[in-house]
Amino acid sequence: MILKPADVSPHNISEYYQLSDWALLIEKDILAVERIYIIDNDKPVLFAQIYIYHLIGSYTQLYIPRGPILYQDNLSTKQKDEFWDNIKSIANKYKAVFTLIEPAELNPTQIWDAHTKISSTERLPHQTQILNLEQDEEKLFQSIHSKMRYNIKLAERKGVIIKKIKADDAQFEIYFNAFFELIQQTSIRGKFAIHNKEHYYHLLTHSLTTIQTSLIIAEYESTVLAANIILDTPNSRIYLHGASSNQYRNLMAPTLLQWESIKEARKLGKTIYDFWGISITKKSWQGISRFKIQFGGKTIDYPSSHIIIHNHIIFSLYSLFRKLRGKSI
Image 1 (spheres, rainbow, N blue to C red):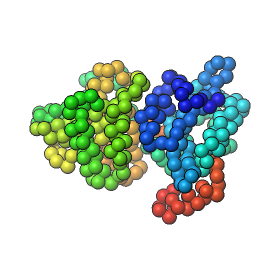
Image 2 (tube, rainbow, N blue to C red):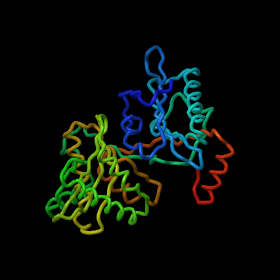
Image 3 (spheres, helix red, strand yellow):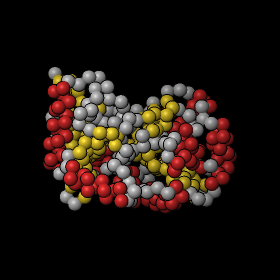
Image 4 (spheres, helix red, strand yellow):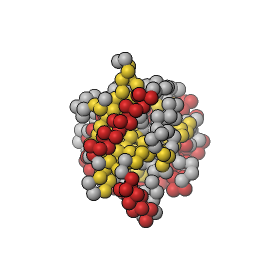
């Protein structure tokens, strides 16, 4: 069945992209959201939260990040057909050219074999670094690379101060503006695109039931040197966005900021600290990936993206447009 917008999605979902609260947090960035929920004998079989984005003209694209969520190892042909029939129905409703799927785990049921093809398109990183927080603090600290441990202690000795800023704090606007200035600096330094200011502001001022967002900052003599947006789900903390200053880089503020965030997540009872994304192959990601990996944990590899094309003519034109711009799909 296709859930109505007012319907609540299942709660036993570990992937925050598939939580209804995440759809609410990014509602300004999307045209709409739809949900497919397949049940058999009152037991959940499959759930998918689908985001609808504008593509070109009056056409759209459907996107399933870190989904669909499968509740059993094997789906029947009838259940698979029901899923794809619903996808086609949603695609027709929104004039979707294609559906992009970025699954969270390998799919033992091969649900997309006959319907999709592998795509090189990535809206999300296909690797991340995960820390298991179900261990004592000293063991966590010792698992960090020795150079990073030294930098943490150096930042502490030099007087770098860590603060957690919530949306209702009196100085929130001041610190938020500092964060946005830093992320602009960081994007220029790292040569990557960022969201508009309203996107980050909406994230930080709209914490919901299953997702809470916070701004944490590293400050030295009243100067903000680094700032991160963190996202807390019931079991996990995700390091979602990070920014750092071009000043006082010798004080190693981002390292201490990350460590304090990890410690707090553990104290709050989170079991996982997710660094959100790394890449051991992309040259432009080497610096930030090395930074994250040196905090320990393990590297998670996500499966390849899959795509199903609904309108082949418009898709061919769109693909040509992207190819002319040096991009693939």
